[in-house]
Amino acid sequence: MDHVSMFAAPASVTGANIHPTAIVAPGARIAPDASVGPWCSVGADVELQSGARLISHVAIDGHTVIGPEVLVYPFCTIGLPPQDLKYKGEPTETLIGARTQIREHCTIHRGTVTGTGVTRVGADCLLMAVVHVAHDCALGDGVIVANNVVMGGHVTIGDNAVIGGASALHQFVRIGRGAMVGGVSGVEADVVPFATVLGNRAYLSGLNLIGLKRRGVDRAGLHRLRTVFRTLFIGDGSGEVFSDRVARMRAQAEDPLVLELLDFIEAPSRRGLIRHTAKRLDDEEPA
Image (cartoon, rainbow, N blue to C red; front, side):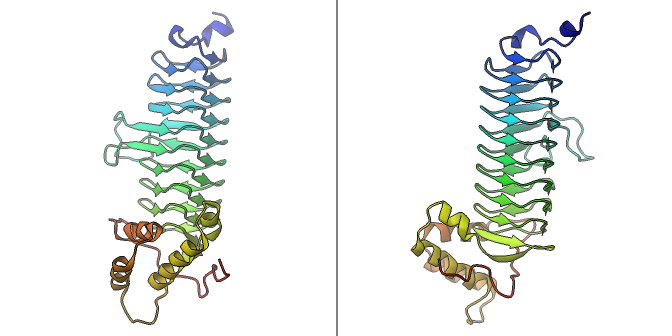
């Protein structure tokens, strides 16, 4: 058998751009305009949607869907079994949203039946090199994860959050929408929406003002959110405990961003909230 025919794709996907050295299992569903580069391996239950591109040396397995125009760089693995000793080969899923970029050496593991059964990365995300997305994690749209970030299982990250390089996210942690985790942070508890956390172990350092401004929040909205944030996490001299401050802010709240913050705080949590702060918050400057 010659070199090219030994590695040829099955007839069901020969309309796609598949390199002769790629191994594509029978049953894989590959869009005609998708691309599978040199030395890639694609399992039987994998779907590559329109415009998806595997550059080279990518391994994809399990019940995995790679969305439209997703770009996967060399030496990534997607949909392989989770690092969970309870996993017994159940047909769980991995879903990658449209236009997401997955850089070199990333690992994204499929879900588990003891979790949601799905590991999900949203649309328009950027996972930089050597990111690990564990089983049952759920990343929203527009999430940026910098180099060498590791996630335990069941981590949830809201839309447009930014995770700094070499950070570690404990299993079951929730990261709220628009939050920012500073580099080399150890995150053991939930990060409320629009906040910035730093350090090992991570503490609240203020609001993510830059991210809020980039997404069009006006000056009045920033001041409303800041007032509530400070009342909740620093206190206003009232002597109320945290739960009472949350209830008081709930009774007064009308702003949708404030309501989103309060909803996150009151939602069920396996890890609790990061509530301790720096001696001086980093958002002191005028909005």
